[in-house]
Length: 142
Image (cartoon, rainbow, N blue to C red):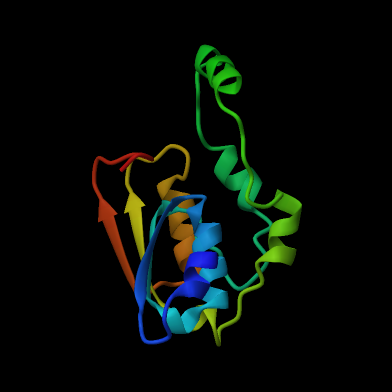
């Protein structure tokens, strides 16, 4: 957020986020809408102006790893959370006046197993962006 705050008032940027970067983009949109030309949600979590109560169960429960892959991943990856799941609705409160002011595009990765097409469609339905595109044959790594 420091970079956003440091931008000159006459400069506008395009934010692009991937995976859970949607949380940071949403926070920036709410805090600095006048500095953002557009926000692109690329195969990621797009919050709505309603509390994201389904966030953890719907997204994290969808990726299907083998037992071996899961064991390896949990030993090699150090998890870093921007916000604890229970704090998201307290820390990132969105309004139609600020967050809703910024143009949004949502890009669906058709073969994404972590954020399924069905879940992407649910997010799009709950919070319709200005534009939706789908990349056929792409997965979480687009």
